[in-house]
Image 1 (tube, rainbow, N blue to C red):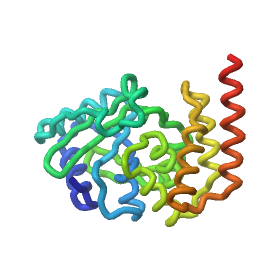
Image 2 (cartoon, rainbow, N blue to C red):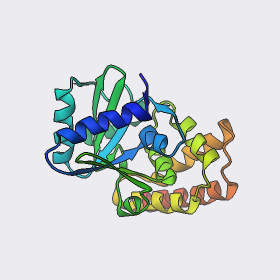
Image 3 (cartoon, helix red, strand yellow):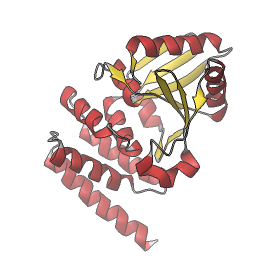
Length: 223
């Protein structure tokens, strides 16, 4: 199953035309990478909503189109401990798979800073599609840990002048918001990218993340 720019836009327009009110959502993952020109096609469309009512309304329309729900644990195998509280609604039909999140992507919150870094706003009828930045796509790839996420992150690093300060700062913000020490996830994710896929990640970034991870771990165990 693959989705390209044309088929993704057509589906979003079909949904937007059926909506009776304006709904905002965020393009993440491969969906966002298509709009950044970093991918020509993706296995799934990833969408984040700001509230459950918006999510349910779009899900209802997609089900009217013939989409069926499927189990999320088969895809998010490395984040099973988070799925009980933050499982997306996953729908499939023909070549399409759509993952629809509400506010939080597995262990990652949608913050005001991510909103401020949105690069594009696309209108599909009443559906307003916001495209997140390359930096935030990398952070979310770390959060989801699906097959192919490291390959996608590598492509973003090749194509864009990544602002690593933004990524480190956001990882700390995520730690404040949730129960997870996100810099630890991020350090492991980037270290594997650098060692296994030869991604050009400055050693200083990894050193800083390791230091932050150790400090955050100490704080957690002292509580």
